[in-house]
Structure formats: structure tokens, C-alpha cells
Image (cartoon, rainbow, N blue to C red; front, side):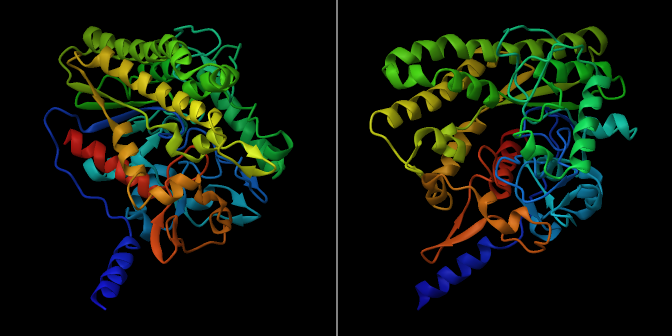
Length: 437
């Protein structure tokens, strides 16, 4: 009887709204937050579709931030904070002709709410709504690469198409905004636009990490302020591109042989990060030498923890995801060894830079994915975007990507193929705060 009561209490606690702990300020890390990265960090630069009907899992930008939608109460955040960060909810577009009623939340929002409770404004919002004086600004773009995978060029102004193809025209602010506006216009006119164009998102011009830093440095209202803390969280798309290009070699070669290819490639990706950091450091030295600042670089989690990694290791056989002996094992080693090699390169590159801290966020997520709350979902390659309630605008109540499995409370780790659920994002932000403040 007591055991049953304990389990009931534990289940109830798991369903409580997320309430971030508020941290005190620290003298080393600043109170002004600047974010660079990809879809794991983006809070609104990559647009949501203006209208979409019958969304599929391939509508990865159904919600931006790219995580599961939440009621304000379930998010644990203040509604005014969410509105100031993401805009009024009624302006976020429609799903199946209905206005949205839910927000999505990722780690920068949880983190900012904990440490300074100031909104996180996307670069797009900052420059189009005259909010460049905002305390926290996010330059991250979904689908962003650290650098161009085809040219390996360290250009400060490179932009890419979705998927990594180099954007050959001038990559100006006006061009980036024009692409974003074109996508919104097309999806407003045609709710089936994404599906009909095979989810290519070709209207959009995606700034690489180098271009994101350029956009930051070009804006004097935002850049080189004292008391600034930077976050760089990028590399997943670069590694994903590398793996897709090399699947035949991964399958044919032994893990030891393919490791040589990994060891040759990962320093190239980390070098893009190094170049971005050096530009920030040089700009401070030249123009604001007395200003305090610090740069945090976050390592990556193993791809096998995500639904996308499961798809790599469990190819479809007669319509069913299947683990194929030897082949699946080689793929799993390759995708995880690539991440490990990239993370190691970040440490070896930056561990002696007084302005930089490499946070082992990836290891923390690896550990989180293996705990009892998430392990069942991770092992099944499950993603809660498949639950219909999350892809309809009429869902006013959520259980925050929890599901019941054999009378045990379990939580999804993946929202869709490659993005975290809000509980995982919250735990990620908690870890970062615990390492900094």
C-alpha cells in the first residue's frame, strides 16, 4: 500500500509545471546574454509557417523555438516574458485554420528566465521592431552550419540554403530578411506550400556561425557591450552533413578505418568556431578593451540519443525500423565517435583561452538520456511530435511530452527528429546555469 502511495505521489510530482530556479548573478559571467547557433538554440529567426494544414514530422519548424508546445502554466515561465521573447501568440500563424494557443520553449528561454528574467529577443525581432537595445539577443538560426561544408571557406559572410548548399548571392541583411518574408508570404497563401516543395525551405537564406557573428558585430546597439556572456552551440548540422555523405564508407569500412576520416574532418568544423571566437575577442580588444565578457561553447550530445540517430541505426526493412547486425553497430559508432571527436577538438582548442569556457553539456545530455525517465523513449527512437495533440492548434492542455508506459511515468527526450522536448531543454538550461553561476 505504501509503495502504491509513493508511486502515485511521484507521478503527480512529474506532472507539475516546470518552475525554473532563479540564480544569483556572478562577477565572472555577464548579465547580457548573446546566443549563436542552430535550431537547438533558435528562438525565432527561422520562421514558422504562416499557415499549415495537416502538419507532418517533416514540418520541423512547426513551432519555433523547435520544441513541444506548452501552455504558459506548464512552461513555468511568466506570460509577459514569453510574449516579450516570442511575440503575441495570435501572431504565430495558424494550424489547420485555427490560431495557435500554445508557446514552445527551449533552453535559452529557460536559462535567461533563471539568470536575469529578461526576454530573449531574436535577431530578426531586434532589427525589425527596433529592439536592438534588448539585454538578451539571439542570433541562432535553425539549419545553420558552423561553416560551409562544400567550400570549407572561413568567410565571415557565408550563408547557406537549408541543407548546406552555398548561397551564391550577396548574403546581406536585406537578402536574409527578403528570404524570410518570401517564405512567410508563400505559406500564408498556400498552407500546403512546405509539402508541395518537399520541405526544402529554398526561400530561406541561412547565416553560418561566421555570418551570425558578423551580424552581431555590425550592430553597434548590441555588440561589444560590457558584462556580456556569449553562448555558441553549433556543429550538429555540420556533423550530420558529413555522416550523410559518408554512409557507404561507414557501412563498408571498419570503425577503426573510418575513424581516420572522422579525425581528419572534425578539426575543420571546430576551426569555424575558433574563427568566430577570435573575431569576437579581436573586436573587444580593439574597440572595448576594458569591457568584461565571457564566451561559453557547449559540446554536443550523442546523436544516438535522438530520434534522428535511431533512424540512422534502424533503417526501414519491410516498413519496420530494424537493427541490422554489424551494419547498425558501425553506424552507431560512427555517429557517436564523430560527436566525441568534435567535442574533444573544442576542448583542445579552447581550454587555455581565458575568455572561453567549454561546457560539457553534451555529456550531461548523454547522462540525462540514459536515466529511467527518458531511457525507454530513447531506446525506441520515439518522438512526441507524433502525438496528434501537439500538431493541432486546438490542444489547450498538454502533458508536456509525458506518456504512460506500463503504468510508469516516462518522458520523451526528442520532440521531433533532432530536437529536445521542453523537459530536456529545462534540464539542459539547469546544467548550464549550475556550471556558470
